[in-house]
Length: 324
Image (cartoon, rainbow, N blue to C red; front, side, top):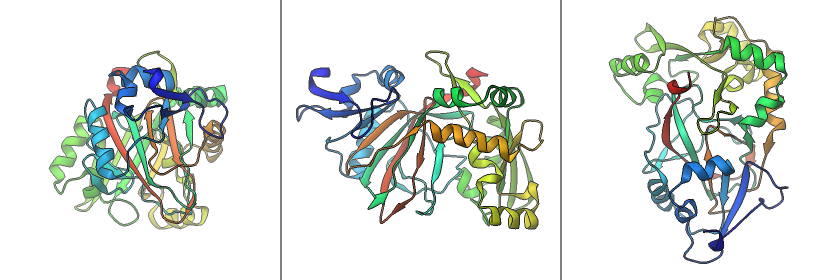
C-alpha cells in the first residue's frame, strides 16, 4: 500500500500526530485502497487524513466514496444545526454566517449514538479563510486544569433545548419528522427527557459525560459540546436580550451541570482556550477529502469570505452506552 501513496505532514504544518496528508503516486491509487479494508485501525493510528489530488470532483463522486467506506451510514437526526442534503448521505457543512467561526467539536457528541467517522469534501474552497481546524481530543483533556476536568467528570453536562422554530430549529427539522409520537419514541430510546409546553414547543434535556474512553485504547477523550451549547456562546447583547425575553430556561439551547446548576462563564472560557490551543488548520484545495475519527478528533470552521462549498458525511454509528 505505502508504495502507491505519499504519506506525510500537511503542507505548511509541522508533523502533527493526529493529522497527515495522503497523495497518490500512481493514477490507480484510490482513497478506498489506502485503507485496505481497515478504516478503523487506520484512523486509530492517524486520527485524521487529508487526501489530496484524488479524482473527487462532484457531490456524487463524494457520495460514492462514502458508500464504499461506510459500514453503515448514519441517519442525521436530533440535529443541532441546519444542513441541506446534496447527494445520498451527503450534506452541506453547517449553514452558519460566513463571518462567524465555529469552535472545534466532535459531531453529535451530546447524543448516545454518534458518528464513528466524519468525512469532508472541499468542492469549492472559499476565497479566503474557511479552514477546518482540527484538535486531538486527547490533547484537549491534557490541556484542561485538573480541577476543571475533575468537576466536569463528576458532575457531567446537561443539555437543555427548546424547539419552537423561532430562534433555532423547529422540532420537525431537528428530529426529521412531523409526528410528535415519533419524537417521543426517539427521546425515550435515547434517554432524553422532554415536555411539550404547547403543541408547537418542545423542551428536551439530557445528561451526558464530559469525556469518553476511546474503544480501541481506553484513552480518555474530550467528547461533549459544552462550549457550543452554553449560553456564553451567544453574542453578549443577544444573550442579554434573549434571557430578558425568554428566561434562562427558555433559551433555544444551554448547557448546565448534570444536577441542573449553572456552569460559570469562566469555566467554559477555560475549556474554549484549551480547545483553541489544541487546534491545527490548513487551507483547503478543491477536491480535498478529509476522513477523521469522530471520537479522536474535533473539527471546527474559521470565518471566511466568498462562496464556500464543503460537504460532510457521517458514517459508522457508535453506541456510547457501552462506555457508560
